[in-house]
Length: 156
Ligand code: ASP
Image (cartoon, rainbow, N blue to C red):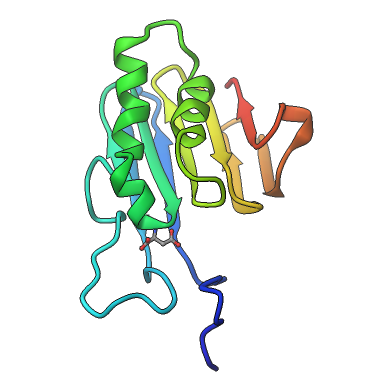
């Protein structure tokens, strides 16, 4: 099958963030890159701080146009907000970072040390899901207007 001419793709990135019972945070991101990418291109996914980042405060995995994610050091910037702006929710930190990137370029999933989950995107949609130990599950594709725009956030 020929790749779509408009660079849109359904084969994109799989990102995962997790927190365990001890509060340990982890992230992982896997991708085939973008359709029609330049040979040899290295996107944001394997660049720690761009598409993938975790520390003691939060874990972040990004998807979208890697060039924008690299330029804005998306994953690390979310962690930097959490580090330098105590009191800011993960959702607010993520919304600020994603909001500073070009519309249509970036989405991310993240979880904080307190167990706050957020899934934010400025794209039309982002396939996403969340599951907790106590059985809560949630899936989404499009913008969740009830969550105040383009994000879903769950206090766990
Ligand atoms: N961020 C990936 C890249 O630019 C692509 C994706 O997320 O679908 O390589």
